[in-house]
Length: 166
Ligand SMILES: [Mg+2]
Image (cartoon, rainbow, N blue to C red):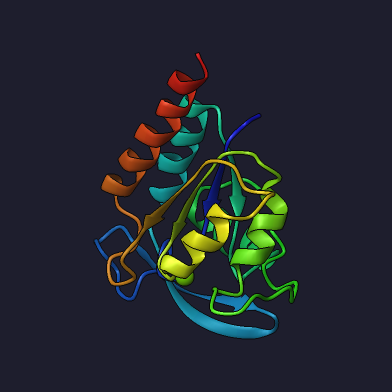
């Protein structure tokens, strides 16, 4: 089963502040509302390389939902990606609203999840969910967003999956 790489926008690709001179500072529209965002055009190539080298599939796991493909992806160098319907309304007590839709989507495929907003309760929910097998949440700090360190952690974990399967 091909692993997944779950990608958040706010706090991950769009941190609180620009992190370098090459970052874009633009306005992006979600559900008709314009938001200021800061984006790193190098993130897309970095993530595509991660997916390529590990045989994993990138998917959006963001409240931007399908807007991410139009408003965010092209600016960071990502192609159109599948979208996990995290706004779908299935909720569970004490867990982030994204977590139940993610569990429903992964269907026992291993996944890494880049997010800035997940807690112990989310890990426990996933751990005990029958639709979830192996996973690794990479906690990204929303001040700086996604950094190479996080991508390296994801690469190491995804590579270890292949070793386990041998
Ligand atoms: Mg976030």
